[in-house]
Image 1 (spheres, helix red, strand yellow):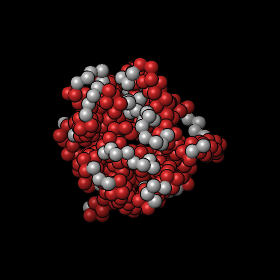
Image 2: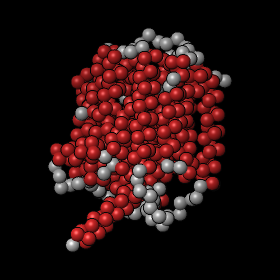
Image 3: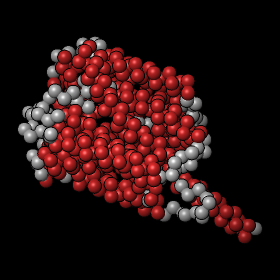
Image 4: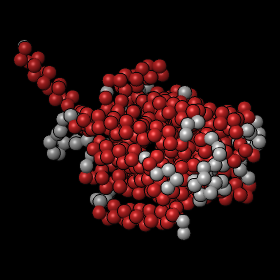
Length: 471
C-alpha cells in the first residue's frame, strides 16, 4: 500500500471520528427555520460548485484532443485568470445593484455557455469559453456568499450560526469534488472528453431553476450607480482597516493556494516531468486530474487532499466554539506557511512533502469558513459583492505572475511561504483591530457587528450629552 493511499485512509478515519465528536459534543441547532434556510442554500451552492468541479479534470485533455499546442493552451488558461480579474470583477459587482439572486443565475448562464463552447474545435471559440468561465468564477466566489450573509442577517438568525453554514459548505464541497471527479471520469471514458462538460451544463441548468424558484432577491445599495459602487467599495477598503486586512489575507492565501494547485504534482513526483509549470496548472486545474499522467497516483492524492479539507472544516467548528476566529487564524496561517516549507527543506522526500501538503489542505479547510464568517462581520452590506470582487484582483495577479515567469519549483514555494507569512501578519493586525472593539455586557449582541452598533450608539449618547451640557 503506497503512502498516499495510507494517508487517505488515516485522514478518513480521523475525519469520521472528529465529525461524530462535533455532532455529539456541540450543542445542536434546533431552529427549524434556520435548518431549512441552511439546506436551501447548501443545496444550491453545492450544485454550483459541482458544475465547476465537473469541468476541472479534462480541460487540458480536451484541448489536447483538439490538437492545440502547449503555447495555445497556456494562452487559454492565462485568459481565464485575466477575465476573472478584469471582466469578472465588473460583472460580479453588479450583484449589489441588480440583485445577488440574479447574479447567481447569471453565473449558471455564463458557465453553461462556456460548457457549450467546448464542443467546438476552434481556438477563438474556446477562448470565448475561457473568458466566460473566468467571469463566472468571480461570481461564484462572491454573489452566493453575499446572498447568504444578507439573508442570514435579514432573517435575524444567530450571528454565530453563520460559521456553521460555511463549515458545512466546505465539508460538502469536498465531498462534491470527489464525486464530481469520479462522475467526470465515468462519462469521459464512455463518451469522450467533452461529455463531462455536458454533465456540468445539466447541473448548472438544475441550479438555475432551483435558484429561480426557491431564493428571494436581495441587494446592496440600489440607489448608487456602478461607478459609485466601486468608489464606495474602495473607500470601505481604504478607511476600514479590518476590511483592508481581510482583502490582503484573502489575496495572499488564495493566491498561494492556486499556485499550490499548479505545483503539487512536480513537488510529489520523484522524477519531475520536463514540462512547464503552466502545463502542470492545466493538468491540475481545480485540483482535479484524470490520473493518467506522471508516476504518482493523482486520484489517491486528490482524495486525501479533499479529506484533509473536510478535517479542517470540522476543526473549525470546534475552535470557533472556544475562541474567536480572529485569534485562532493567526497560528493557522503560520502553520500553513510552515507546511509549504517542506518542498524547500526536503526536496525529493515524498513522505515529508506529502504530510506537509496534507497539513496545508487542513489549513485550507479552516481558512474558507473562517474567512467567510469574518467577511460576514466586517464587509459593508451595501457593497459586499463589489468589495469581495476587488479582493480577487490581486489574487489573480499573483497567479498570473507566477504562471508567466516559469520559475524554478523551489522559488515558487518560497514565494508561497512569503505570501502566507504576510497573510499571518495581516491577521495579527486584524486581531488587534478586533481586540479594540468595545465589549458589551452579557445578554447583548456579542458579535463584532453588535459591538460596532453598541459603539456607535455609545458615541451618539455621548454626543447628545455634550450638546445638552452646552445648552
